[in-house]
Length: 212
Image (cartoon, rainbow, N blue to C red; front, side):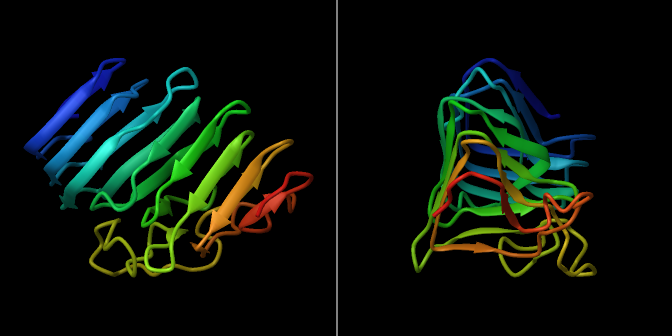
C-alpha cells in the first residue's frame, strides 16, 4: 500500500492517500492508531486494511474519513481480536469484514453507535469465542449487512449501484462455546450464506452460547 505499518504507532491527520496499486493503507499487528480528516481515493484494493493480531488490542481513533474510487471504499478488518478492543462509530466510511474476523476467548470487541459493518462475500463471518458488543441507539444503530448494500455507508464496492444485496451475501455472526453477543439497537440483514452443514444457517448462529 501507499502506507504500510507493522507493530508501530500510526498517526495520519489531514492527509490524502491515493493511487496505490494495492491498499491505500495497510497495517498489521497494530493497536495505537489515529487517522483523522483523511481522504483515501483511487486505490486498487481497500481504502484501508487492518490485519489484527491475537496479541495486540485494537482501539483506533478514526474520524472524518472519506473514500472513493477504491476497489473497496471501506476499512477492511481481518484476523483475531485480542484484549479489550473497540472501534468508533461512523468514522465516515464503513468497516468491511474481509476474509473473516474472530474474537478470542479472552477478548472483547465493541462496535460503537453508528458503526456500519459490511461483509465481503458469502463465506465471510465473525466468529465469537469471547464477547462481541454491538450497542447502538435508536438514532444511530449498529448495522451488519452486505458489501452490496448501498443504503448504508454508500457504494462500498464501487460499482455504481450495478449490484444489489440479497439474502446469503455473507454467512453469520457465529457464537462458539462460551461466546457472548450483546446486540442492542442493531440491524442484521442479508446474511445466512455459506451454510454447508446448517451450522451457519442463521445470520446469528449458536449452539450453546448466550446472546441478548
